[in-house]
Length: 225
Image 1 (cartoon, rainbow, N blue to C red):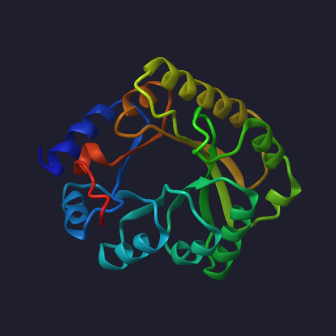
Image 2 (tube, rainbow, N blue to C red):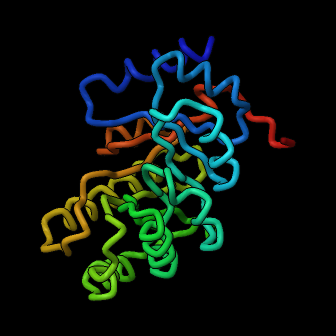
């Protein structure tokens, strides 16, 4: 199937839900991203700041660029002028750097706090206690150039659908609990980013508001690029 047909098929699955499609364009050439753009896609996800900055320069400016990969503090400067949403904030140190670079650009950058929900140690993210401590801290409220708008999580890479569903359910329940808390002025829980090509259907069923899909749109990636 073509990129357009893949996007149309995925969008049809999202009808009736509050879930948005993030097309994961990491390692994809400009031509393929442009093809997705012509098919109506406007939300794209990248995992490398400098690659995203290069693509931003070459593609239409009504694209919303989402950083979905692990972000190092020294790379924030490359995306601060234009990034729409950073999904992968996994430390206060990173939040502080995003705030610093956003201030230089006279912007307020929206962020998701990445939660460690998988059984794999290789995944990044906060645990629940760390999250609650951060959300109640005066240090977070002092950051005027960021806005925490939700949570992100990556499920265990497994064929065990019961485990994946359980991890997504737990994250959704935490998200709902936090929505009901008294939060700082720069925190508003409105997005829950969970689900990729292999598990997005479960994620949608469990309350995801954003699914990050690459392979099911663009096909298998060339990791040698």
